[in-house]
Amino acid sequence: MAQITELSKIKVPLGGQQIELQQIDHAEDGMSLLRIRIRESRRFTIFDIDPDTAEQWARAMQSWADAQRRA
Image 1 (spheres, rainbow, N blue to C red):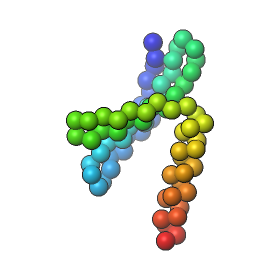
Image 2 (image 1 turned 135 degrees about the vertical axis):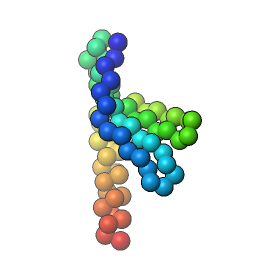
Image 3 (image 1 turned 180 degrees about the vertical axis):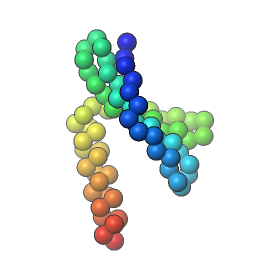
Image 4 (image 1 turned 90 degrees about the vertical axis):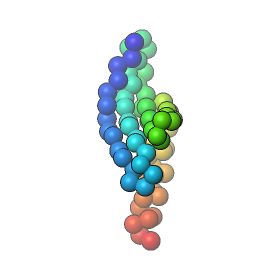
């Protein structure tokens, strides 16, 4: 059975989506994943990603945010 730890909840001001970040720890094999849940009205999109993918995604998002601040 997996243990779920809430990390963050974000409400998107434009569009009203809710983004939840959770850590999923699998007891069987010790694997930890980052779960990203995006809720739009009644629809959910869920990604479970590994640390390397999370790092790449975070870098891409940070680069984009930095570029927007400089513009």
